[in-house]
Amino acid sequence: MAEIIMQNLLSPVVLFFILGLLAAIFKSDLKFPNGLSEGLSIYLLIAIGLKGGIELSQYSLDTVIRPVMATLLIGGMIPFIILFILRFMKIDFKNSIGLAATYGSISIVTYGAAISFLDSKGTGYEGFMNAMVVLMESPAILVSILIMKIMEKNEVSLNVPSHSIGFIPASFALFDKEVIRESFFGKSILLLLGSLFIGLALGEEVVPKVKPLFIDLYNSVLILFLLNMGLIAGQRLPEVRKHGVKLLIFALITPLFLGTLGVLIGSMIGLSLGGATLMGVLAGSASYIAAPAALKTSVPEANPSIYLGLSLGVTFPLNLIIGIPLYYELAKLL
Image 1: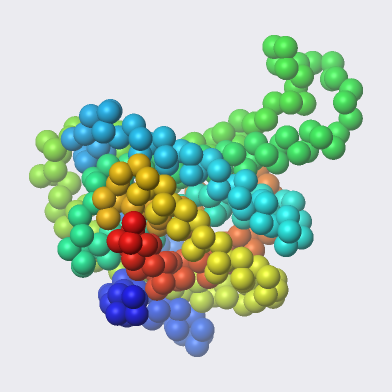
Image 2 (image 1 turned 90 degrees about the vertical axis):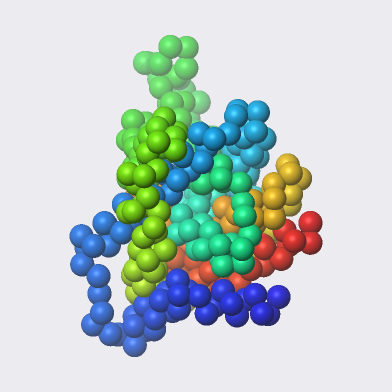
């Protein structure tokens, strides 16, 4: 186990993340231009979506139905687990919703690092797992917002308003247009879904056209992106510390618990060693792209320094260094 952790720690993607982390801690003048940072994000979203669609085009519905159902189940139940834990930690409700959405959604870059890890181990995985990334991006965000709206309705007057939507009072409309727009048409989900469907529609015919940029250069671009993520994570470490030890413990223990749950479910539905590992990575990672975009509009009271600081400053490096090899070892045992 220690050998695997060291191999992952000494991989280029992790070392460049640590380099960025150290640069931020020691206040280096190293920084990425905003346009480049945005461009790297867009590249990774398209690359993962395309690969997922191309791979998915090779499988029948009968083959992927169980992984799809398992992925949606995990994405839908994680917010309830997070809220249950945070209730006993006495975290306020709005920040709990922010953490439930963030930790229920996924980190695309952690998933990309896990793929690099599996490649380095010579371990294969089901190609349709790239498509599961897209499916698990939004359920937790929508479920978290739904829970918040229901809880808010329990606190308001039971007087029925004068106008309604069909037979449902307007006060019980659970999503407004802006929430739906941010959840389904935010950058990450739009690019992932769009790229997935393009890859699915065109199949292997499109491979010669996209391979030089989106497949061959993927790991190199991931290194640049992780260098930038290291800079951002290092800048957010002080924000995490000032919110107390209990949140730090939450960000260290909860992802490993959820990742273990993901590996168990992946093994139960018959995924391979690599596939079960990736299911663990999806369950144990935390979003810092899609979830914050939706929370900014739907839960403005939630403190971004908490859900972003924990997901990017604590859980992200935890999964890179410990989580991925841990999920791999658990999948081997199962």
